[in-house]
Amino acid sequence: MQEYVLLDSGPLGRACQRPGMALADECRLWIDRLMARGVEIVVREVADYEVRRELTRTGALGSLRRLDDLVATGGLAYLPATTAAWRQAALFWADARQRGMPTASPDSLDADVILAACAALIGRPGDLVIVATSNVGHLARYCDARLWTVII
Image: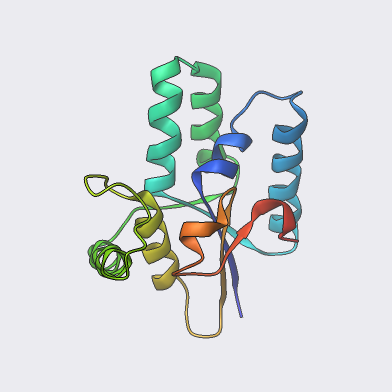
């Protein structure tokens, strides 16, 4: 059984912050501990996009460089969204709206359902797949989503 932890934009963005910031340092140590015990840490394309767009908007060049380094040299796996993930996300999006519980505004791309769809399709039966987030609410409807601070 393989264990996967997919990073939502909250912990991914935290991990990109400059060294010396307590929560950022804690997040990077948390990632290192998980990797040391064989957990595959996954950056999905949609989470990268959410973090990257804000870092670009604010001109946070150091954080952008750290974001790139997390995948290039930090040992994290970067996985783009597949056609199957987009189709699963469309099903989650429609389901949420049919139940009157949307996860984003009607005109939003809705990164939460895209990330949840990616989580639903990763690994093999029996693998443990967890989305590490700062906001469990929307994601937990469709996948195992936990606050990153409680995943050990």
